[in-house]
Length: 96
Image (cartoon, rainbow, N blue to C red):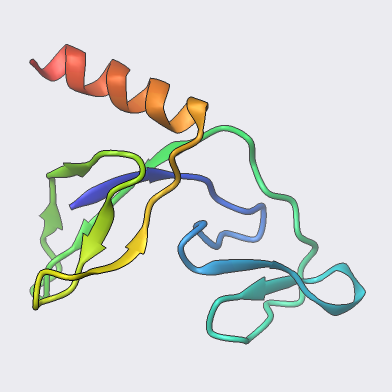
């Protein structure tokens, strides 16, 4: 599955990024810091995900929906801002 989201200037996606940490450095959701400045992008992008064999999963998750765990329960919810919704609409209307 791929999802629409935002990427920080350091490379973290919004699902991996928890915001600005001490001294203005980027803070990953895992608690680690890459040490670079935090500069979130307002522009969304399609962020691919991969299966256990490294093959891309093409299904596009709509903004605001959850990435499901193996049990089917959502782990996290994707960004539902207007820009993400507009990009999803653009991509799915072209594919339809």
